[in-house]
Amino acid sequence: MTLRVVRTVGSLRRRLAYHAIREATLTTARREDFRIVQLSIQRTHIHLLVEADNKAALAAGMQGFQISAAKHLNAAISKGKPGPRRRGTVFPDRYHAEIITSPRQARHALRYVMVNWRKHQEDQVAPMSGWTIDWFSSAATFPGWAEYGVEAFLWRSTETYDPLIVYQPRTWLLKEGWKKAGEISCRAVPSAAVT
Image 1 (tube, rainbow, N blue to C red):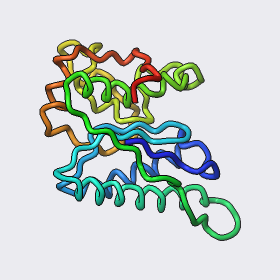
Image 2 (cartoon, one colour):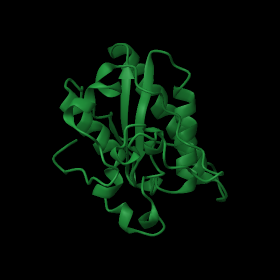
Image 3 (cartoon, rainbow, N blue to C red):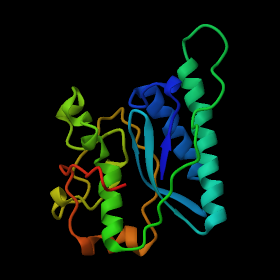
C-alpha cells in the first residue's frame, strides 16, 4: 500500500509526525482481521505491507488507519501553533494497493518498504547517514535481515525510541515464502521499477 499526504502536511520524517503515525498503528493493532506487517514513513508518503482476511477487512482496516493517522497528524501539525487546530484532508487519494502472489514479489515488497529511505537518499543526510536501518520504519522488527546471520534482532534502538506497532506476518509468503527468492540486505537500494 502507498498513502500520499497533501503538501500542507509537510515532511512526515520528523518526530511529531512519526509519533502521530505510531498512534495510528496502535489503533489499527486492535483489529484481528487486518494486520500491518511492515511500514515505512517517507517525506511525502507512507508504505505499508498489510495482511487482511478479505476485501472488506482490507478496506475497513485501511480506512481506520487513514482516519486515525489523519486525526493524529492534524493534531501534531497544530501543536504549539496559535489559532485553531488544523482540520481537513491529509490523504488526498485512495490508497494504491498491490496484491502479493509469489515469493519473489513478497521479497521485493519487503525490501522495497524497509529500505525505501535509501531510494530517496535519506541515508545520505545527517543524522540518518549514520544509521544502518531506517528508524522511521518498522525495519527494526524484521528478523530476516541478511546481516543478522544467526542472531535475530541485532540492532538495538535507544531507550527513548518507540517502535511502530506491526504484526509478525501470518501468511506463508510474508513469513517464510519470500526466503525462496533470496536474502534481503539492509544496505540494498530498491529499484524505482519495483513498487
